[in-house]
Image (cartoon, rainbow, N blue to C red; front, side):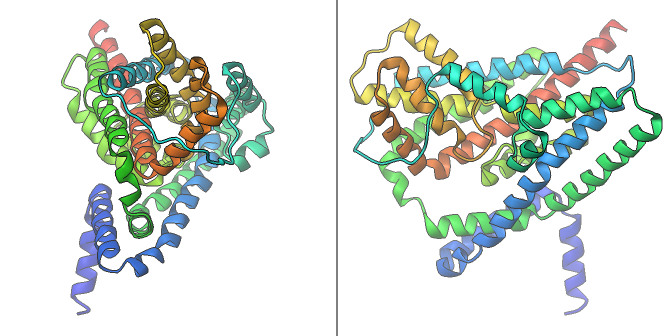
Length: 410
């Protein structure tokens, strides 16, 4: 027995992280099926894992971005602009896909009076004002609340300022960045255990019975997300790289999307994406900024959720949508998605803003938000998986594309 155990542990240690996550996933499903009462008690394990990710993500982003900019050497190229373009293009394309799918396969909702204790923004100007206020937030509060817009702003500002400091200061900052990275890798190594707890407790507590009544709506939502992940995004990557995009697409879905699916938080998945970017050999000065930025503004899944649920309400109420209004909805959904919070359910609070385009009163719009929370077990998981995996995908596409272009012109 003593000879077998070390051998088994050694084999598990040598197994890739994705394989161990799949083992944890299967174990969680089996436990929820055979012993649901015991499975509910594993919720604590999942909460600890997600809390650990959320704890390390803000300080990691702050230190890594600041160190990256502070130690950036003159003449080194970064590829932030093409990545930003891909982020915006992908988010808008996702909204367009959602409009087309909702037109071809309209969904109806059973709306009833419900009290939903959430506050939705009153207009696009309010969303933009909120973003601006987040930029100038107190840095300590930004770190404590996970305000990644504010964290990025302060990290960039401090990084630029420290570039003019002595070499010793910049070296200390780089060592601090390496130390935080070690802690992050330790947290990520517990992903299989955390996902085991999340899956077992979720299936035991909720199951999928509550989702059957909204099966058509869920099919449209997840169908749109799969279409974007497997068709639209690969087309964008092919346009950028001019070669088969699917090996890169599947790598990002497997190694980033799976974890994001269960953590249901783009912000919590930032450490996973940074680690994957490093393994892909991407430019550190680029991905250390683009990954946390993507967790804030690259929200293709959120654009799909906002568009599909809004058009479901429109169809239920019998409102006719013309082409110009559909295009406007795509633009609004893309802008709203960029303002969506990087936490679970963040996109749902922006649905009333999109509903206001069609004159739908807030009382009805908030009922649509309530429907979103009901189907959130799958909707939010699939949305986060698409959002987060696309952060790495577009960062890799831009970096590799620019490197190949530089080699051709050299």
